[in-house]
Amino acid sequence: MIETSTALVEYAEALRGGTGPVAVDAERASGYRYGQKAYLVQLRRRGSGTGLLDPVPLPDLSAIQQAIVDTEWVLHAANQDLPCLAEIGLVPTRIFDTELAARLAGLPRVGLGAVVESLLGFSLVKGHSAADWSTRPLPEEWLVYAALDVEVLVDLRDALADILEEQGKTEWARQEFEAVLAAGPPAPKLDPWRRTSGVHGLRNRRQLGMLRALWQARDDLARRRDVAPGRVLPDSAMVSAVQADPVNEGALLELPVFRGRANRKLVAHWFGAIARGRALPESELPPHSKPGDGPPPVNRWADRDPAAATRLQAARAGLAELSEKHAVPVENLLSPDLVRRLMWTPPEADPAAVAGLLRAGGAREWQVGLTVDLLVEAITKA
Image (spheres, rainbow, N blue to C red):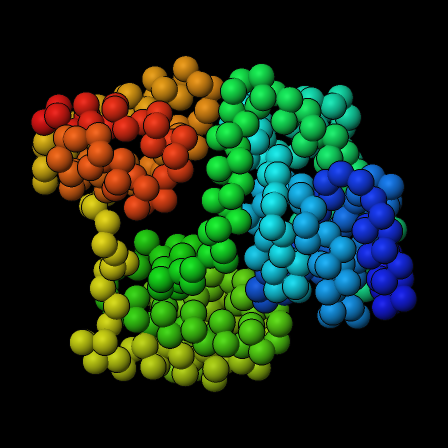
């Protein structure tokens, strides 16, 4: 464990003197704390050993960043860890994503444990992935678990790189890794309250307005307390409260979750949110469905635009055949959302026009080269 500035500087020097790529992983406290903050960062490099960095007492990790900034970082499912690493000043310039590489290589299972067992013959001890990593001090067995996640990551990288080279997919992987880096942090979700579990059980816009107000009240409280929103008030309790439509605080306290001591103290907070949603003017109530600029749900295409449905069916069939030929999942060949958009509002059936829209939609060159002809053919089907 590295918990002091002195130990941090010493380990940074060890990393600088190491060789080859550096394995990187991060542990969060999802389900316990608000947000996706990193509470432990694991690093390993040949000749440097494994370091378990505690970012809680060490907010300045610039010494580590400077030591490895020009080194290839090896991560598993990099898009999950890169945002929380960036928050603490750790940003790579080159990566190798073993989960993404496993997908491109056609492995049937791409979880870290499964890929390590398949290619290296080791079984990783698991069991603490859902732990509260904000706990201090961290138990010894948790630290062992965390260290194991980077123990063989570079060896796994080398094995996957060999497979990709044999399959002629090295350039594909390079482009994919660059795209992950270029993507940056995910954009804030539009209307995140609509992700509330059970929201589809609400029948009208007034109920949606009440749920939105209750969700916002919960989110504000969770942020202030640094507690995961679901621990402040479960999704099911919010939906039940909206459906019950309590006329006063006493009626709200009759609902199961609200009878507990913690929520009894907050009953005015929760009822106030429900009342605000109930009092919204009609013009401020949310629409039934999330606004968006994409095509309608696919199950409505045949009725709304039969020609578009025909195009999409042809495109999907061609992509499925290509997926089987190259042993790459369909969703990694081309974004399903991009395919839907192209088939709903198609360009001219011309390779240059289709390729231009694919690039504008974020497709990589290897994807454009593989799919452009079959998409042009699909456009001509209707």
